[in-house]
Amino acid sequence: MKRTKIFLLDLDMTLVNTLRGLYISVINTIPRYTKRDIDDLFKIENFVKEYYLNDFNDYVSSNDPETRWRFWSDVWTRYISDPGLYGMPYKCVHEIIYILRGLGIVLIVTGREISSLKMIDELSYYGFKDLVHNFVSTGDLGPFNKKKDLFKKIIDHYIKTGFSHDEIMVISDSIKDLEHAEKLKVRRAGFVPKEASFLEKVFKEKELDMIRSWCEQSNVVRTLGLY
Image (cartoon, one colour):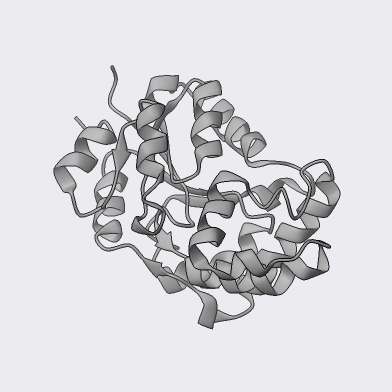
């Protein structure tokens, strides 16, 4: 297998612990989009499982893509409008990105339903803006697109420029992201934030390599195919 040369890194809960800001933004936004009681979501354990395993579909139906787009766009707009909600980069992540830069092309690819241009201040705050080669979001494609569309556009671009599928890797905590990567025939690796440790079981069942900490350098090197 060829060495990985294109690294497509998720942002939220993969490079940065954004759980607190996401929690506050969702809790303050979702009442406008659902008639369901949200009391269960106030407990952080319930919130995390709903976010990862159900994507709030029981609150904002996946059968209504327009409403879901507006909901998530409002969530992320609220999040970026208040620097006090910004998260904290995971320990050792800057060092790993610096290593990846020397080995290939590093992109931050986020599923946020807002333009990546609106995220410049946040990425600067994290120290990522000038560290990665580029950063893009689902919002860059316009309303009602999904992250799988963004992945396809990026991967198609690099395939056309001469890279092979097994030189491209998606790294994410998102189950959907990793499923998209499989369908697009590129490599994939799961990140397991300690706040969502149940993902380890999910990733094992899917026979995925995984990263639990960016500081476990030997495991990161092996998982990301850096040799």
